[in-house]
Length: 605
Picture 1 (cartoon, one colour):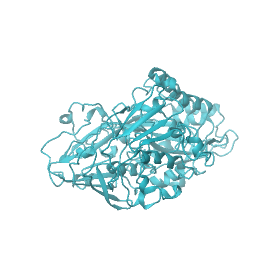
Picture 2: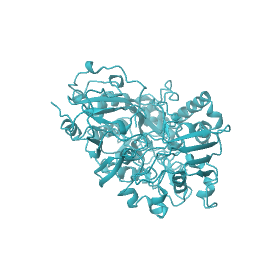
Picture 3: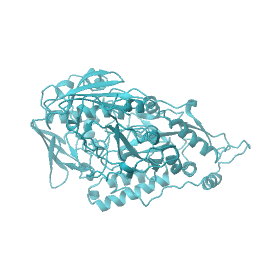
Picture 4: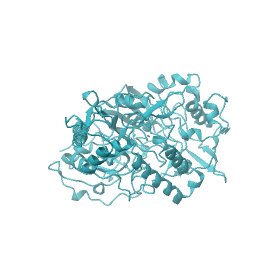
């Protein structure tokens, strides 16, 4: 499975998430150079567009031999430190891992697998049997070759009932024999065969379009290192947290827990010796990121806070790159719980937010287009469906979602029985009982608190008493733990605001499937099950059919409203003018090719 970043993985909507599963997007040619037309923003009312940016850095100057590249992760919290693709859950860790490890399979800008990765593949006529061949020159950082055993071992660990991570789901259960292995009925996975040292064969239960667009887990786990560690203890082991290895262009030299990782070049990298000698990846607080860029403490960052872009658009020592992010922000409703034993969602009709009319009214009450312009200067814009425009073949651009209409929100609430029976200005539930809705939101950046307050005020204006959980914002790690990242759902949370970095494969089952831990809303329905299954079926190998299915799914989610998509967004990335060969195009960044023109970063004038 090729992840972007904020793999789909997690990153908060508040900062520039998703933060982000495990990066970025664009056409295969950079957009026309419009930098000469850019003017520094003089006030927060200036509105920008993603079309203002190039996706590729202009190369100016000659590369020097070596150099020390400094990469910032913009967050107000420490990174968790699960530095292995098979165990991480947050995008901060993903941003670090990508410097020293990588997928065995490569993808193109349309999210389809190619033959350009560390492994090639063949598919039989049935579309169910994949044979992978790892290249001979692909070696772990300790010199051991990356083998088919290592790749199969990753599947065995993730499928093990003692596995503590978040990966196990339909990307694995689709493999023949995986469910029997996971339940303890079999000692091995019948659908996985190690043919020889470099050849792995996987047999799937059915052909699926997802298999060719990211639905294959493509991250090996060095068996010679992990084989003697109990699966239940792997994630917390020194081999994950203190001395991780991969086969990527750089090797981990040292780790300052939660703060920084120093890496040196891997002379034996399979795509060729890296141009840089050293890379430091470190946490940069959003409040100090501008200063860090201006003074050269970092050459670039994962994502620049878009609320700070207007006042820094003409920063003299960087070029701002940008593209549509493979992510969206959303507001989720808690509709059930996670069953740890069964490893599936358990909807609860007694949940406070179970009434779809209440959820629809809350969507109609908020003006996401205005939020995007006021707080993000147009670099986030109104989201309409749960498939973002980063996947243009499947995003239903004709579906407008639910429009901002507070009067309609009031009418829906009135008709559903949510009325102010005691004349205090706030509505009670249909049984006449006090209705207080607890809203969880994350800290991060200057916009986090005002955006949360905006939504609370908007809901108040239609008569809903929504209160910030514990009266404050919550930092990234504790927020996701309480929302359900560990499988424990905090019963105090009714509504929460977060974000998703989506995977290469458009299939949303990993976020909204019945067996998906990341389905934090804990929503499930028979129709949802049916459409998700159809979208990954053999019949969906026909793209037109798959487009039809996902169009229906996007509409279903608007009708059911387990979550409100709030904003699609731009990724804005400033890159120091000394840097060469940098891009934010989907899968376009070749880290071993990054170079610099001088020893120290250029400072702002």
